[in-house]
Image 1: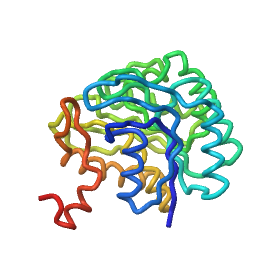
Image 2 (image 1 turned 180 degrees about the vertical axis):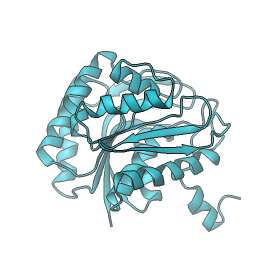
Image 3 (image 1 turned 30 degrees about the horizontal axis):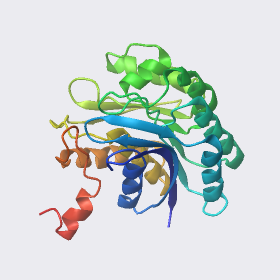
Image 4 (image 1 turned 60 degrees about the horizontal axis):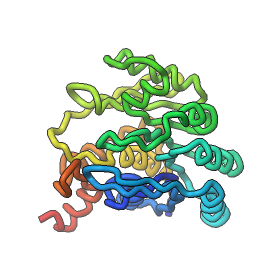
Length: 267
């Protein structure tokens, strides 16, 4: 069985972070493992409190995984502080994992910050160059590049700019734009566009986590980057289309819709 590791924050409400990543891995038939970097007390409506795990414990968790079950892909999500980023980067350089997908999580769906604004420079210097693919949304891409993204052409320019910072490929997600949800992938040579209809729902908690972990799962299963992105886009679109009206805020997506449909459990 293929394996994947998520390095991210824990969402106790189950819709984002580590919990969303592990559900996504399972939905793709990939054995999931986790390194928790922050414990986040959040729900669909708000973030209540964040407690970061110490850098030495982050490193110890990564050692425990890599010395026993080396993953076929690694997904990196929430990294809240420079010390946390350096701990993860040091271990990535030590173990040289294949298929590193990085989602530069800066804000929760409700707008609460999940990354110290002063840590973006460390993210760019220490972690970004170790990624095979970076998956920022439009606000994150704007923050990383200092550009304003208002069109598909702007998204392509941002992707080129971010790739020059050291990662292998960049996917600028278009979910925050108007109209259809169009994502722009640049692999250093070619641009790819992935478009899907915009689904009228507020229940999109954890979509960025889900997309990046779906990319990682498909890479672990042997897909190349454009194919992994295309399949992940299809998966997350289905998960959003059949999202769950749970909680008082932005509800979660349905990570197992296809499985439940086949099993008759969606009734």
